[in-house]
Length: 314
Image (cartoon, rainbow, N blue to C red; front, side, top):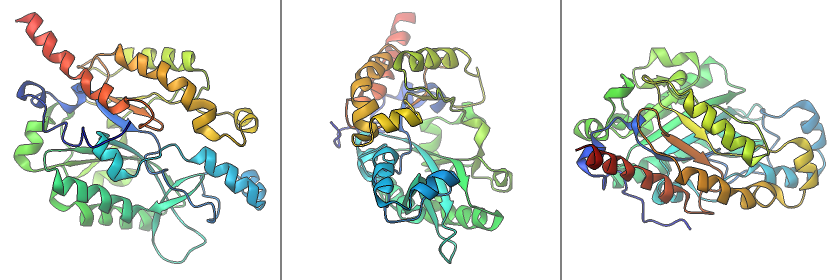
């Protein structure tokens, strides 16, 4: 269901919405955003334990891992064109390889971070009113030198598009457009305070339900939304189900999409449809396989409920 219909949705928002803090808008995001491609020929990534690494010496195990590591079908460009504006990013060096390269990882290694960032930047150059939030929230096999290398890469790729960390309530689309800024980077490692364009990870809380049960997930989303900070942070509602070991064993051949996601996404989407953005409402909502239902379209549409509220109060 993905297409290019939402590639300029931020630019198309009416002025009364583009004047609101980004933290008060509904923004569609993807979970493990980079995992549209993982390399089953690569070593097992450092986010996996020793027992998995031992098992992965059997070639079949890596094929199974791939089915459970991939949580998106769309590339960064395709996600952006479909309206996704928040990206959940997990990165690692490759200890088996000489050189400083950093890769996206989820069980297995994905593409080089440089290649993914370039793809995002190319889209932003062609859509100068669209804004992305890049959340670097897990780092593996990375020492201080790797972090310096990654931060330098971010500066090199995005340059003047990077938004200086500020009071969250000051960040509106209009504020960003006036300054020609398009990229907010959240960095969950203490190097952030050395760089003005890195936002601390605590500005992007993303509570995790860690359940296979869709009803428990929705209860968790409701509870954590009710506990959302009134000011000073963004908020991620992770509308995702997480497989247990026994879930994977039962669905070895079918993988994440066919075992958990397909049958539960409609229920999750129905929850999204009942939400409302605003200071205490939903902000960023993430999903697996964002193209399977009208996920981005539905989240974006929530913003127009704020217009109705303005009309009702006038």
